[in-house]
Length: 328
Image (cartoon, rainbow, N blue to C red; front, side, top):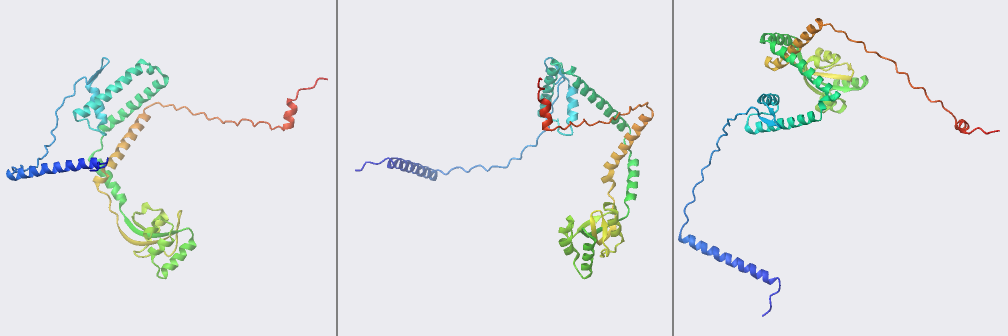
């Protein structure tokens, strides 16, 4: 009998393992046939429980760093400043804010230890920050006491809507860089040329890809010569004389007109309120200026004289100047 080589030994071992596994599985099958397995329980879908709000209390102080307490009032002030960017409404977010306050307090204590508050530049920056804070606080207080009323907003809206009344125009155009080119395009149109196709091939404007279509616009959105020419056209007509603007020469086709539709009050209300607030601030500043004694020092402007140009010398003259005088 031949002796098995190194390859046949692992193969024989693997075959034996497979045979044993098959036998074990067959035995399990017979056992299962003899005693049927109990039916598996049906898994019912479990509805996830809704997240319940967690009640928590922020202590006062929220932390103590090297004996220095960080008050809950300071915590609340920081949370108020962060309200527009992130919410501090859970134990986790509150802990994160406390950690931030602790790190800031550590840095502040280190700055005091290094006497950085005595640095002239830092003193100046702190003074500027304080001035800015106090000045902006005055404006905020004044605006809170003089919020624009609904009547004032409605009045400004009616004024704005009255100014918006008029026509809107839907037009296409072909823009070229010379009057002669524009006249040639008009001649092509008179011969039955397609406006959109001519715009695609001849217009230098970005609207050329859309056949020169400009969509709907009000006269105020266009330069005066263009708007005036479009307003004079009848629907479906084009300008039979080129229209010149700072952009070049135009051939304009008026496609449609409609009455201008102003935006609703709800759409304009934030802008109107901001405009009224700006007016209140400007009026307040003018009142302060009129009641103050202000002396603005004139800025002294002096002419800077250019430095005199160096005197040009020849190499021979330089050599002569540097040569030592011979003793006689």
